[in-house]
Image (cartoon, rainbow, N blue to C red; front, side, top):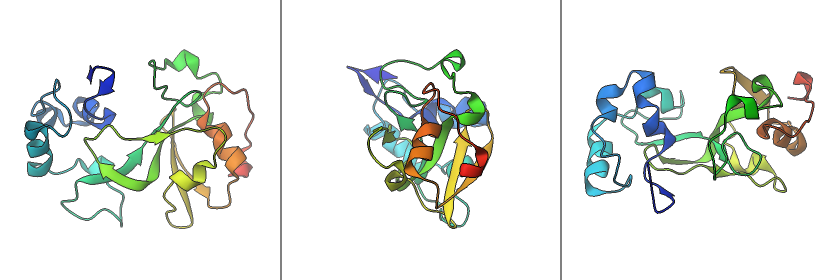
Length: 170
C-alpha cells in the first residue's frame, strides 16, 4: 500500500481483516491515498472500529484515534523495511509496539510517531489517568506511571538495543 515511497493508508486499515472488520476493509480502495475522495467517503460513512477508541476519551462517531506506533531506526516499526519477530532481540515482552499518541489522527491516515532516540518520547504520548498505556510486541498491555523516565521509555521503544529494563522502572 505504497505509491512513490509514500504510504497510502494506515496500518490500522491493513489489519482490519484480522480484527473482524473484513467488510470494512473491502470498502477501501487500497491503491488510493487515505484522503482520496473515495477513501474519505468510507471514513466518513463508517464507524471507527472500537479497538481504536480510548475508553472515556473517544466520543461515539469520532473518526480520529490516539492509537499509534513509533516509527524509525531502532523502533519496532522501521520506516524503510518490515520488522520480523527475529529482529526483536530485546524480547517481545520488553519492546513497545503501540501507544496512545498525544495527538489524535484520522484512523485511516498513515500518521504515527517518529522515533528520535535523542528526544524525550513522553512528549509524544497521551497522559491518561496519571500514566501511559503501552502495548508490547508480545500482545500484553501495561500501564506505565507518569514518572517513567525518558531513558526507560526509550529502552522499551527500541527492539534490539540490548538494554535491560526492570518492570519496577515503570
